[in-house]
Image (cartoon, rainbow, N blue to C red; front, side, top):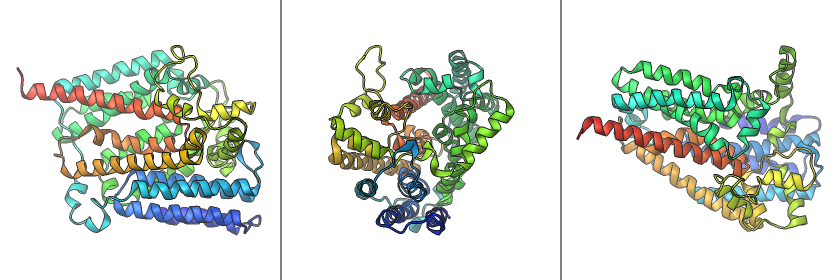
Length: 456
């Protein structure tokens, strides 16, 4: 079903009156077909994976969206590229895809031809055993984190993504002020729910964490990637169908991306003082604008990147260092690099600089073509290792013993979609902020549970 949906979306532009059958449109079609083949292979290998997220991003942002923009002669942010520029970018994205496919490899541990053998593990509901002390710690911790978040951003920002919230999300302060408290809440809700499922009690603690989840992670108040990361991640924990039915995760991700992605983007521009009619108009415009908005700018950003590199040269790893040291505030590091999208567009004196910057092009702006290839290799190897380790643990761990990776991985899936779109410096805050928080709450809960079993 996922492949059919993507294939239809790729074919539709060729049926319109403004369709152009040129080397450029052929290049987009090749990119799309290649990505769909790799997505099909990755879905056959396992029910859900970081590979699948990558290929859905690849087909959508590097084929379907730019193909529509090419036929409409309209590119986000007003750039008018030449056909050689478009072809060059197509070749670079294809190079990224080919290198990534080899680096990420395949893992047939839970492949389709082993479905009968793994049926027992795939059908079992995930559970987690918590001691009463751990239950109290997680539920009270959720209340404290909710209170902390309210004190930081205000009650109004809990239910609508105001401009103040957007500014906070783009700063290093977000790591402590917003990312970690929210991660603690939805991580606690997952553990408390899995514990209640196992013991058939402690439902009250799960309800408390659930209320905190709604307050701290209300969809209209979050960035779109965060909504998908949290709620699709929780769905994987709660519904075994995501482990049994191949393609179900990818289907929800694609449908959510096509409908929810532009819908929740509208809340970013609705002010607290906006009337109901004004808010409704913004939502409708966002849903009907198609691929012409900055939501689908990942491919076209490379045109600006080309110009920047020609004018100033590659960054020689400076942007990469800034991303790796994302947690250092600018007050301590005044010369800290700014996100790559902001760097490129501010250098061009563009009035709006809060731009995405796709991961392949992060490699290019750091080290040129070799940087793009190197990033594809490293990212592919990381994806291969994380995917393999997760599914190995899913098949081997006791059903009442969820590991740190098993807790973090479902939330990481959609976070990598955000990582692929960029910019890297901003996304690392969420990827590693969530990981650090999950690790802490898991370890403390585990220690409390062990002490209750083996008291001194």
